[in-house]
Image (cartoon, rainbow, N blue to C red):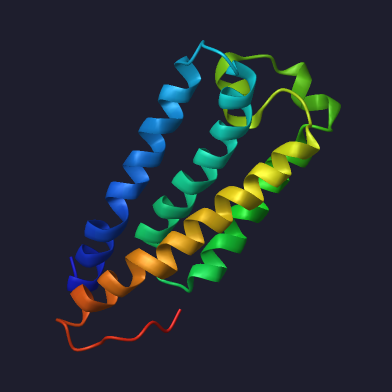
Length: 142
């Protein structure tokens, strides 16, 4: 494994696992505001998780990764408008693809993408550049 790949794993795996864990915990939440937590917070967290997962595998600009994840999330949301997806009831399908179209979910996807890209550009990318270049690079090019 190349040093750049190792650096990407070291930088992006912790926030990826944090977003995944928090998202899974939000699925189990049953207190006040359950719909808000399970619905919108879960949507924000899944987009953050996908962004950092993609960041481990795809060495591209933060904006390209963010737009790619946002497009995927919106595509899956608009897929819920199609009647054929409702004809395949399954708890796993519902968890991954959703059960109904909600325009507010798209706002949650935008927010999650903005959070992920913002944290990446402000906090993680400078560390990645430092690790992958052995400390010879100090600027952010992303």
